Image (cartoon, rainbow, N blue to C red; front, side, top):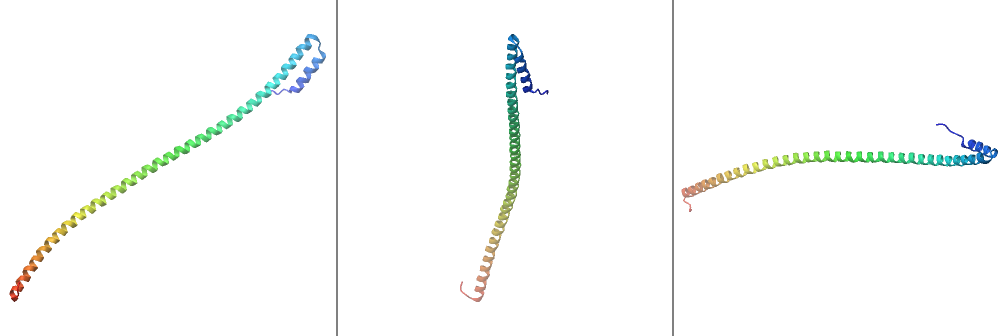
Amino acid sequence: MIVVDHEETEREILRLVEQAEGHDRAMLLIIYRMHQELISNTLATRQIAKSAEEHASILQQHASDEMALINQIRGGWRAATWSFAIITLLLGALQAMALRELNAAREQIALNTARLYSLEAENGVQKDQLWSIRQHLRGMNGEKQ
């Protein structure tokens, strides 16, 4: 990029304008005016370019921040999904263990109930036997029944 000293160029044009006459002078004044407009245009273009670069930098930072947020959300969803899967597996395992315990308790209750009926039946037989023996002993002792 070639940098031109516009002030030096302006001084040179004005020097030539002072020396020129007639048609040449008018052309140099037009060139001088064009030079001033080009300088203004260049300064405005530089300001626009600087603003555009700043804006692009801000947009780039915004895009980076957005991607970081999206990645954070993705990570959160992954963690939530894995957590849900683990909790589901744990609850399933707990449910299976509780069901096994419940079935074992039902089997034990059925077994204990059967034993209880058996014991009650034996107890009834033993009561009848004791009553018979007692009646027999009373009869032998001559007691009233």
